[in-house]
Image (cartoon, rainbow, N blue to C red):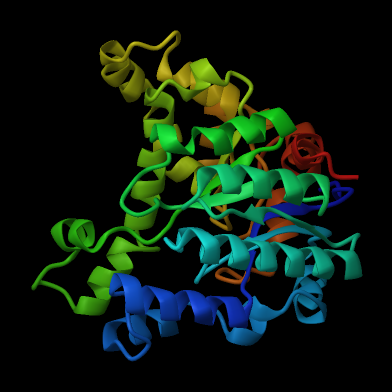
Length: 341
């Protein structure tokens, strides 16, 4: 085993308590969001969510974990309670700017250990594009993260095109992350009298549903023709590509025949999409994705603090792949794509 020069992980989350509380209050009042005392939600959170100390810390506590796990740099993005999906345009802009400013301040305190992805107020796509511009040019962020859908719409809707166009203009990637799926979808696919309500909640979220939904979001973007309009656009998809990387042949054989695109679905995917493991440290999945996409299209991630595996460095250093592939996945691809110094 040859030690790697460094490890960079790029799907690592934080929250700001004051912002997430305001988001929760808005959602409960305006959108019928889940109340804090909902028993199923409380049980689900006790299983799947980290401690507040872990996710709210952007400093020494996180750095201790990074040191123990062999991680040199984390690229941070907003986690639960994100202001992205606030439907009040003015409030969304205010909270996203505040979150990005706070993250930038934390990065300045630890410039060799942290970098950032912006959170964007997508209720106002023009303002979201402006905030991405500010976050990259003024705050030094490396791109942005879009989570789930917005107000029942996937991001392939034409109204969101300014955000993607701005990302291309700035030459930064957008990380397409899972988000909470609509209640009617969760009820139809993931709830049943045959298992406990909390199992349905997990099935619809981190257990499976989030990932299927996030993969569909990527396929919809490809099918919309966005890469014909913006051929240089770069997207990132976590959890080994949210199932899509394993279905490219089928998508080409069936769906591509029905779309009016310049190329096959797999061609767009392999040229414009980067994937990360998001802490799913499986040699079988790693080898498959290398065979399918190539090591140049994989960037490392751990999904901290939802997963806190101390073997982050060890897994990659001992993986049954070439040293060249380990170096690309471990840090070189991230340095190139995100222009990390």
